[in-house]
Length: 403
Image 1 (cartoon, rainbow, N blue to C red):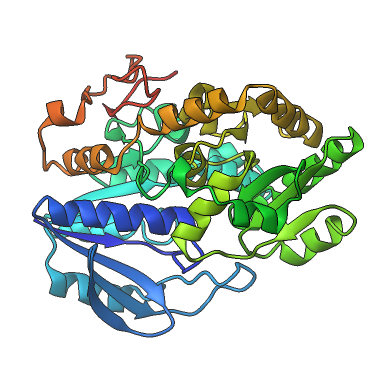
Image 2: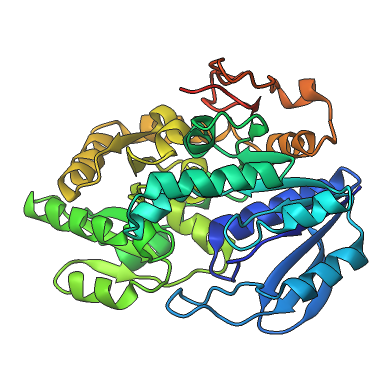
């Protein structure tokens, strides 16, 4: 089968989405399918990669978004889709690419929309009035335009569930358990950012409003005020960089910038004492899962999807500096061998093999469900469906009732 995937808002700095696209594409290729990815970029390109064919269409950057680009020309993209003649399309942008569901339906092509964010949550971050009503209207249109809606957590699926959407599937993402491993810890990396006796805290994400990096900075201030010798590394870049520099002027905060080398990211995560993920609208949080795979516990925002991802390998707290500071202290009270072993054990419940299998089954390209250890349950609007694998806290569920 030829699976053509489309995604906007993909740059060299978009860690989570870029990682998911790459690993899913590689998995489709291994499963014997032909994967094609179409993304925006500076100029046109067409290359073969480990994740299949990658086509870049020239697109203009969106102002004040940190370099994001969007394929806005429907005519060019329609012509390209017609030329590619896909058997299935998989879309990772329900804002500007929702129209492709109609294109697929007109041509008898199977379609799937992957919801990588909470629309209601993002509208709230942007200060939109009546966000729930607007999100409901847009989500209903998305569900009507596509054969299948895929969400990676129950948190992400909740805004579709409350609408009784019948074509909803939950599939958790995965983590590279070899690339992200406790053995990646590096004393030289740690000494670059923290002196002996200091507590190394890492924030690894875009420096954007939705990720709440200022909360990580303020948590360090709270820890220092409580005489905890904590230092913070901000690994990422974005529109909030300058404002954060002013905010952290008198604090031990190091700006590492965007780290393109994944081995270097793994070394930083594995060398940290604690990773913080303060974003309130995270719908999966690959960086947090990568930290766990490195044996490093995580403090997360209780308003996000991350509590269901991290389980007991971290702590979920309210979105305040004091709460995050308390969360860091709570984790540090656990013996280091215990907290690191629990973190790694939790990450091992997730794999890209399971994620690929789940996505292929959502496409109707069923692999051996027993091999994935997951169950599929058809939605009945009045039913309450639970994950099929209790130890992960995340299963593969087609549909789901309210709750």
